[in-house]
Image (cartoon, rainbow, N blue to C red; front, side, top):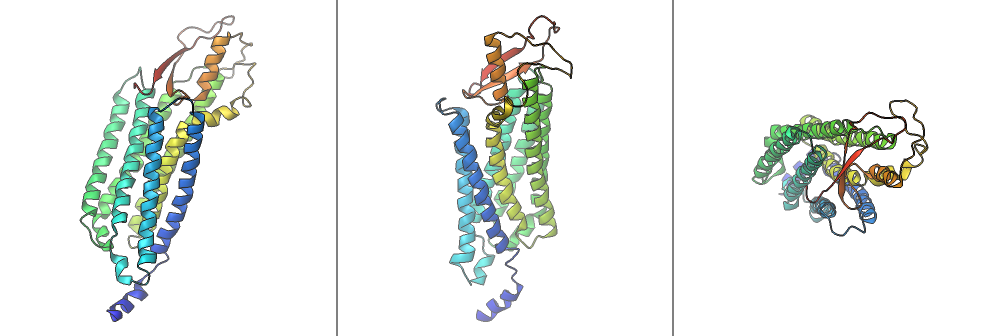
Length: 339
C-alpha cells in the first residue's frame, strides 16, 4: 500500500487540480459577498412593500447560492484537510461534489426561467411566440442537465467524469445559446418600447446595455468551460469556471431587480429637467401637470421592478405630437404577482 501511494505521488499535480479548486472556492466566496450586498440593497429599497413574489425569489436565490458555497467548501475540505496525505482518497467522489452539481443546475435553470418570466411580462400586448420559444429552449437545456446529473450519480471515481465529456460540452453550449437568446429578446422588446421621453429612453438604453453585458458575461463563462474541459480534461479548471458562472447568474439577476435603484441615483444629474428632446430635435419647455410629472418620475425607476413590485408597460404614442400640447403617453400598471 505504501509503495502504491509513493507511485501515485509523482503523478499528482495539485496546482491545477485541488489547488485550482481552492482558488475557485475563494473567488466564489467573494462573489457570494457581492450577492449579500445586492440582496441587502433590494430589501432596503423595497422595505415597505411586505412579502412579495420577488422578495421570495431573492430569498430563494440567496439560499441556493449559500448552499452551493457550503457544498464546495465541504468538498475541498474533504480532499485537502480530512484526507490530508491520503492520496487514494483524492480519486473518490465525495457526496457534496455531486450535490453541488444539482444545486448548480437549479441555479442556472431557475435564473433562466425567471428571465423567461420577465420576457413574458415585457411582451404583454404583443406576440407570445418569442417568450414561448425561449421557454422551450430553457426546458430542453434543463432536460440535458438532468440526464447528465443522473449519469454523474452512477460514478464512483473522478476519472469516470471523462465518460460524459460530450454531454457536458452540449450542455454548456446550450446554456451559452440560451443566455444570448434571453439577452437579445429583452433588448429587442425594450428597444421597441421607446416612448420619445428622453429620461425614459435613457433608462431603457442603460438597461439594454446592462442586459447585454451580463448576458455576454455568462455566455463567455459557458464557452470558457467548454474550451477548458476540451483542452484540459485532467484538471479542475473547468470546475472553477463553473463556480464563477453560478455566482454570476445569481448576482446578475438580483442586480437586474436593483437596476431601477442604480439608474435613479444618477438620473437627476444626467439630463436637465427643463428640456425634452426626441431624435435630436429641440422642443420648447413642456408645461406638464403635477400628475404627469409624477408618472415620468415613476417611469425612470424601473422597466421591470418597482417598490410595490409592479411592472410598467409603455406603448409608443399614437397621436401626432403637437407643439402646444403635452405629449401623451399611455402607461399600464400590472401587478407582477398576478402575471
